[in-house]
Amino acid sequence: MILLDGIYYAAAFAAAGGVVAWLAGPWFAVPAWILALFCLSFFRDPEREIPAGPVAVSPADGKVVAVKAESPTLNRISVFLNIFDVHVNRTPIPGMVREVHYQAGKFHVASREECSEANEQNIVTVEGDGSTVVFKQIAGLIARRIVCRKKAGDQLAPGERVGLIKFGSRVDVLLGPEWEIVVQPGMRVAAGSSILARRRDRNQ
Image (cartoon, rainbow, N blue to C red; front, side, top):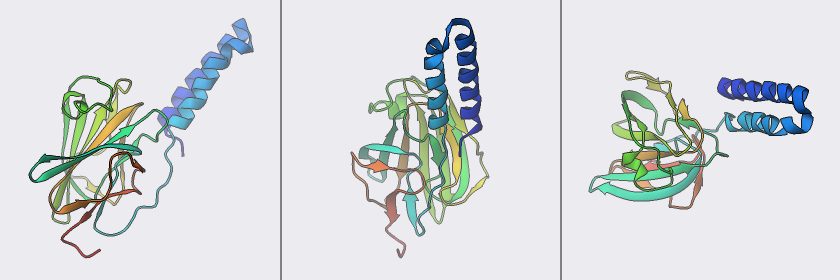
């Protein structure tokens, strides 16, 4: 499936290419047509098989760039998305959205550690099955628009889509001590289908 955003962008570039081809010749229009194809690829939204059980799944496609303790009771997993990754974001756990908070900030390269606090971001808090999980949609150097289609009070199904970040970006997931993290830096993960952590206090 292709998101409407991708169809609109692709149509605009394709139309611009058509005008350039008419005015200057088809070879001059090739860059615009390549960008149109790129937009269709970038805004793809594939279906995912959501794992069952008391697990936290990745909210984004990409590469795990950090797994670290934020405090004695809070761990952070950071996933970096390049421009070729799917940028649709999904909830890590099913439950109710308790808060959606936008935080203005900078636009550093999203793979850098300081991005977790300094960059523009949307902070989503989800509560479910006795656990509260926070994930951040973080803008990067190129990404200048974060989209979140959920609001406080919304009920989320496992792996449900919540929004997207346009172009290169980063997603952080904050997990409490009830979660056992099962990923390591360098691993590739897929939104909705890759397990980041399992509940310690639930039968698997």
